[in-house]
Length: 201
Image (tube, rainbow, N blue to C red):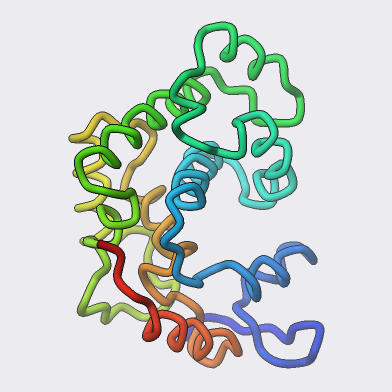
């Protein structure tokens, strides 16, 4: 069973919230709630890519800066970025200045446009990989068969910095699985939100 800690209201939360005070709000308002908005899905894939080798706290603290730098993660706008934009982003101290990850975000925006054109939406494509028989204990692993499959398919479509671990963290956060700890006050809320979800098509 994953560790639990008391939240600000005294009710139990996932133990990872103890790492930073701001994690409680992120945990209660975002993490694990199902997302079918293409912009938010693209944003999270980008931010998880930028997080590789870093802490989520670092990325979360810079999220508004990332949104400003990347046009709100509107992938149709990011797809038009050029070398001048790469130079601008490399000079932006408010984000993670990693050329490979910046160039990957631009590349992935172009891939996202292609996927939307062929599949109808990012959500329709991504939610096909929602596992139907999730049996692993919450927060007991860093990859899954579903994350391996989605990672492989994204890379097949030209995406970069989307390995199985990155994709698994994305799936946790975007509600494709409910990875809240057993006993966490949010686990039931996430389950209800997932049950009410209209699958994107």
